[in-house]
Image 1: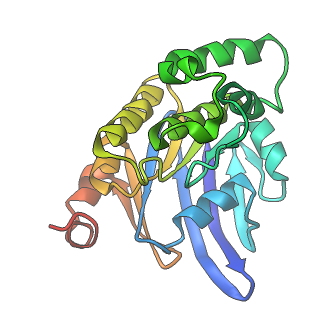
Image 2: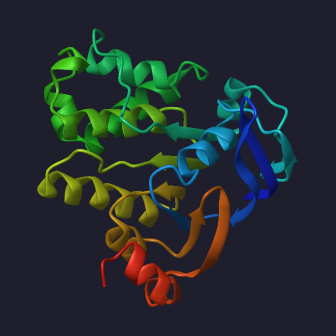
Image 3: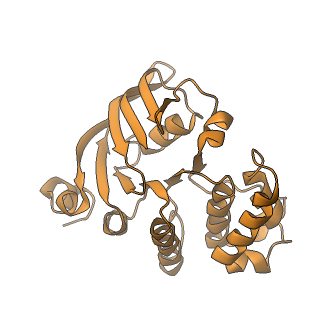
Length: 233
């Protein structure tokens, strides 16, 4: 579904991604592992179009998309849940969700809204409340629901457990597992490396803007370099 081929990206004169390549097949959950500043968020932003690529190509569902505007990529079927949630705090929960469907119209919007409230019952209870008044875990659910309202083929999840209590981390990761069972294709960046490797099909390890290791999660988890650097073993 997604192929990133030797992609580079820069912030001014500083190159943040150095020829990154990865693939995500239809129905897969692929996780991207790396330390802070390694380029994980930059890569997701390049895929969604928020950050421009300086070189390389991005192919999604058979179409080259690296020159398409971000909103067109949403229409094609890519949705990103940004790091730090970034909900629209003054707006209600329901309005936040509806904004996720701004490139959609018709009865599907109402059906998807009902589906989000079914997937996240706590949001249904707070549908009229300002999003800024939600807990961190509830805001993360809202951010995921907002992205799902666009009916994506590919969901980009950036650090969904960041800043959450352990019990809420489990709830968020359970949501990822549930979406996987529904057939959702997901590219996951997650600071909880052990949990990410446990729920994903394959993994890529990125260091200083370069992919240094890739493979099935069991192989990556048993790699001595990964165990020492990211698992503390």
